[in-house]
Each structure stands twice: as C-alpha cells, then as structure tokens.
Image 1 (cartoon, helix red, strand yellow):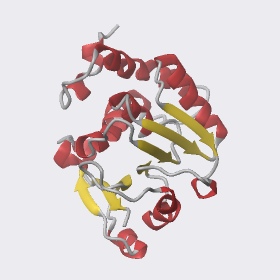
Image 2 (cartoon, rainbow, N blue to C red):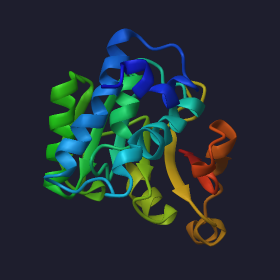
Image 3 (cartoon, rainbow, N blue to C red):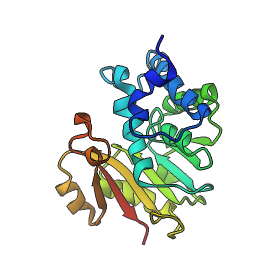
Image 4 (tube, rainbow, N blue to C red):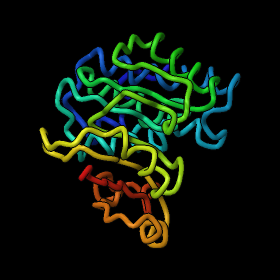
Length: 215
C-alpha cells in the first residue's frame, strides 16, 4: 500500500504547508471516491485512477490564486461529487463551503466523503443555485458546470460586494478550451489565468481559471 507522501506526491510537488490532519484527509480521497464511484458515477471512469491530477490538483488551482481568509463563505455551484469544493475545504479548514447541486445522489457522495474524512466546514443543499434566497457569499466557485453567462446569472445575486482580501469577491470558475465566444456572449470581462502556468503539467494545457469580480 502506498504511504501518504507517495500517494500525495503530485500535491506535495506544489504545496508544502499542510498539517498531518490535512494530509490524512487528502490521502483518504482516493479510496473513498473509488468506493463511491462504483455505486454512483460522479467521476469519469477514465479519470478515477488519476483523481489527484484530474480532480484534486485541478481544484486546488483556485487555492493557488485565491488566499481565502478565515471566515470566508464560499458556494460551490453544481458541485457534483465535490469538486472543487471538497479539496478546497481541506485546504482552507477555516473557510465555510456550501455545496449545491440539483442531483441529490451526488450530494450523498459529498456528505459521505466529508463524514469519512472529518471535514467539518462543508454544508450541502439539494437545490439549484437560482432558487437560493436570503443567502449571501463572498465567493462562488464552479467547475465546468455551465456557460459563463449562466454561471454569472446564478452567482451574481448570491455574492456580497467587497474586497476584504487579496482577491475581490466574485465568481471563480474552472473551464477549458477556446473560451473566446463564451466570454463574448457573457458580456463579462473576467480575469483569465492558465492553469498550466500554475501547475506545469501537460494535462492542464488549455485549462483556465476565470475570475469575475462582483461590481
């Protein structure tokens, strides 16, 4: 059986300031997602053996550009089986992550993973983001869920105005491919960062982080 450092070699290649508790939680994700994916398909079958590169490290690209302060409130829109929210919740244990999805069985996986690893800064809600009322967040995160114009339509009303930390409050989403048309149709002017400039791995070619600040 691989040791924790061996299993997490890819993450430790880029981050080196984790507690033992965080490392244990990250190491547990591999078997937990394999176990749950056999019951409920939340990760592509071809990706499940590359979960740390394709899912965990990809999610943590947000942590590389956004240093969330303790007490920050983040909504993960269309969280699926827990990406990017679960890795980010481990990375930022003092930040609150509200995981939202319209498919209940995916949230069951998120809850099971959080319970099994002892992640305590995650809440889940079975709903669509556009149906949420009377809740405000500092940031919304999302990973390949919908076109940028739709994401902003859902996220915008849920975001607090402000610039209390390094990055202005807003939407942070992970997307891939040629985004020119999608950005044009959104009418937005996001800050765009190539993931392969953060983590120089071939897998991240043509993958980007987009940040839209709340005006």
